[in-house]
Image 1 (cartoon, rainbow, N blue to C red):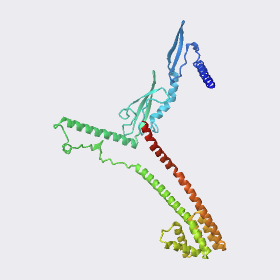
Image 2 (cartoon, rainbow, N blue to C red; image 1 turned 90 degrees about the vertical axis):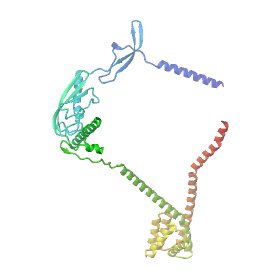
Image 3 (cartoon, rainbow, N blue to C red; image 1 turned 60 degrees about the horizontal axis):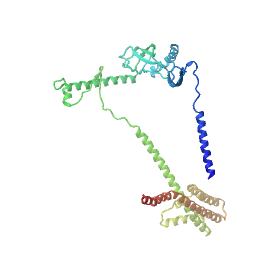
Image 4 (cartoon, one colour; image 1 turned 30 degrees about the horizontal axis):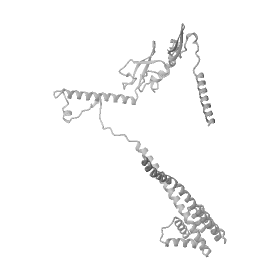
Length: 414
């Protein structure tokens, strides 16, 4: 008990000492401002804010808030900045055009350039051909002059920029579109005014009888024909189609792999039984060829659905009947089934056919023992995997059981 109290006191003392040290080391020492001059940021910088103390006679005035704006540019500095800014301004004005002697698309009348203090104003000598934002208003080539004014506070400089506009096909189409839109709008306004004036107004009798608006049929001497705007083709369909095709390809691929895996699994399961029968009949004196034919006939006469192993054996029987060599037919059987057990089995049969020997029965008996052992090991492994897969559902059932038990108990307490 005493040790705990001593420990608590030490903690209290340590906290108090730490607090006093933090207090003593906090803040900064007051220093006299040299020559009563506060530093300010260079031109274009941010405004600084200072909190100072002042001594007036014997009185101390604390925490005076002083705002110090950034220094203003001198005229020489502005001239230097403008020299650096003009090439960038002209490049921005071009707005992607190749040059001022071949302006094919709209210019860009901007107001500011980032990193420079100047503001910009623009004047076109021919406002009927160049709009207030720099857009070209004429379809025909023309030459004109643009006045660029760069200023900052009382500083101002202006420049004349000669240009030669040669509207491109895309720009000509855009200008013509704007003119037609304006013409149609005027037609609508005239129609609305005629309707507002009443029955005595001068109206198109054909249009009035059919309750429709007659659109302009010509513009600047060119005939106009109108068509209903069809909907554009939706590229999303192509993307969806590609996605569906990929999903189908992936699904078919997985399905083929699954069916192949299941087929090989069934061959692996049936192989030990077939090997046991072949070993038994071989010990009884039958040849491998006759045993193969007999096992296929026995499976066909049983009335049961053919297993994948039986199907592969029947393929081998058909090859033998068509005149293929026994060694080649057995080797092909191993390649088609493509599992280690059948590959070793087919290799033993092919080797026995080529080299002969009397130990085939013993070798097949050893293969039978290996196949049975491997089958048992696979069964044990499958049982372990099944137990692991059941773990999550069992946890869910445990949660359900806990809820069934605990909820009524809590409701009783409440």
